[in-house]
Image (cartoon, rainbow, N blue to C red):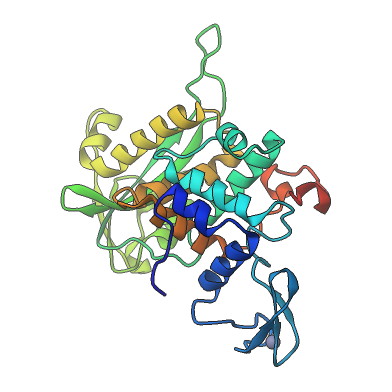
Length: 316
Ligand SMILES: [Zn+2]
């Protein structure tokens, strides 16, 4: 399918003035080769009310929003489209406060939940892994806040970053929060983020050993002297990414990111970083909606960690 997206906010307003127009757009992105029944894989169906399609073969009523972040929403799709435009058209991303203000949403929690659903959609399921020469290293996020006595407070979170070498520049990146610098965590991350056959460049940390049997070429540079300085010099790309990430968290989100939500912010940062050279904001809008119709819905309770919310609470 040709990549078809609005280029300006006026085009957005004109094209997506009705929920029907939004739904048609979602259908083209969800089923680019035409309708496919989620139950029997049948290719033929009839349109029905409320954006459903009835499968000719098995009579299943398929909905274009079922299984996506738009499932069960009570708000108009055209409001979602505006939220997505707002999020993708800001160079550094949007805060929940700005989404609430721009869309005139009643509550802060709705804006916050929408943003988190959108962040979930920012990393494409089954996305391509990094390849070529890839730097991998860990960094700490947070824990810099100090109390009146100058003692560090607040949690420190460990994040592992992979960055493709693109000449002297940075190619694509991946990142993840990990509980510890163990072999299981680091190897698991590398396998999820980097294509076998690639060269993985790390420091001499012992837990990185054993990547060769997993299909990687491993290049370990043992750091001498001041660990931080040496790491910045020898693995410059991951450290550049780490400092951009920290600046972004401080700037756009005032550093107010709790560890349990950090994963979503890492996904948003990765989405923006990997598309930083995209000339058109409209293309980011397109990409995000395309990915949004491919992901499972994120119930509110999974985002607030353990607190139980009924289904009605998150039908927003
Ligand atoms: Zn069917």
